[in-house]
Image (cartoon, rainbow, N blue to C red; front, side, top):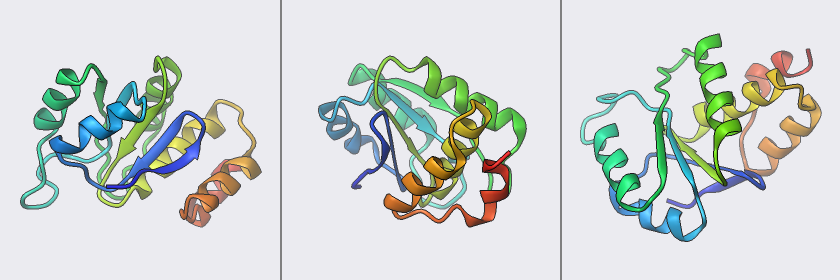
Amino acid sequence: MEPRILDAGMMVSDQIAPGDVASLAARGVRLIVNNRPDGEEPGQPSGAEIARAAEAAGIAYRHIPVAPGGLTPDRIAAMGEAIEGAQGPVFAFCRTGTRSTFLWALAGASAGKSGADILRKAADAGYDLTPIAHHLSR
């Protein structure tokens, strides 16, 4: 697991294991956001396992599961609230990091951040926001 940096306070990656949490703590992460539904894939660590590891490391944890195609207004708002309320750097994950990046982008746009800036930051981190770009320029 190697987090991709979206901006100074936000990192994303693919699925993590409980053993990865210590390295996130060492990076200064203060909140882990799990955007993956439990049981999405065989062998995937449960949200409860990640939450226990986060608690042991002194990191806050939020589970905002998003099934593929499930970028709903309530999930976008929950992600925005999580990021806004974090007491430091945020790390979010899903299967590939894409859903987490989409949520970050849509939450940022909802908060009035520049769509062009969001698109650039995501592209710099290796994520293509083309499927949601029209939602970022409102």
